[in-house]
Image 1 (cartoon, rainbow, N blue to C red):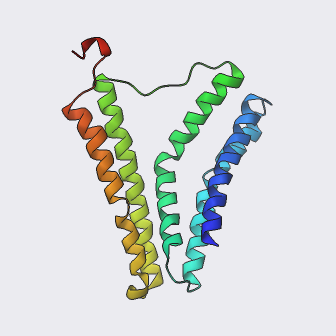
Image 2 (cartoon, helix red, strand yellow; image 1 turned 90 degrees about the vertical axis):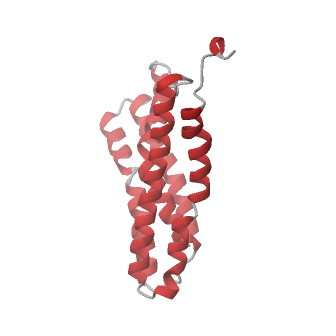
Length: 182
């Protein structure tokens, strides 16, 4: 059931976001748009409450609980950026807004961008780890709850790869404009 709720949360995120942007830019319903967009983070709250209820009822901690924590953590870290990304594209396409912002391609701006993006991911990981730790304490039975703590380590390899191949690589081998790459 938890997996279905995670999938429904992701679908709900995009449906509420799309409806909020359509109300704002196509229908010019500013208040309705604001209400819909304010409801987007409530999806994470629903998922969190459902996960806590499931664990409190004595459910065996499993990968669905870990995935829910990671989903919420990364949603907290990247949710605002995803909404901004969609808003810029929707405004440009349907309301004559300026072209969407693009990440810098080189220079100090690119370096700062890469470190900030990785920092957001680290924040998401930290939020997920805190939620998993809280779930561990909530279950109470340390042997039964051990899979929750194991989930806290799952993002380690992707995070390390991201760190090495983007922020560190950009720090050591900075990108340059094509005319300066000789």
